[in-house]
Length: 99
Image (tube, rainbow, N blue to C red; front, top):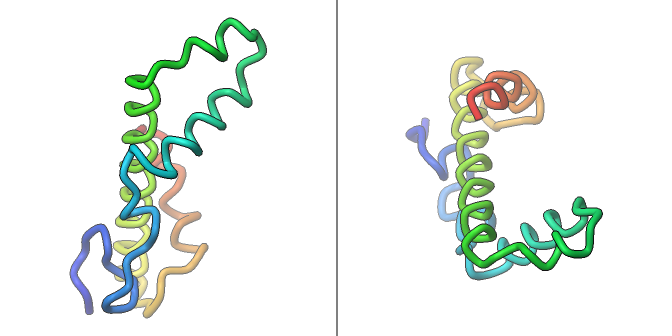
């Protein structure tokens, strides 16, 4: 079985795209769109700085990697060959409480 880590549970030689994104690239654009979509006041929409985008992008990246690692550990505990949505659903409540 593969070791537990950010890429564990994926096929050998395969890296998930979210694990490769830098805060400068597509993740920044995604976080920016998510933040701006939920602001109602136009003054607030323009107030999102580059530092806040970088912080939110890094937090989102850490959250996704942690979810993947916990899902892999759950799959290993169940002797599953692949990580499925079922394992993610089992670890999600505690993950949300931890964040």
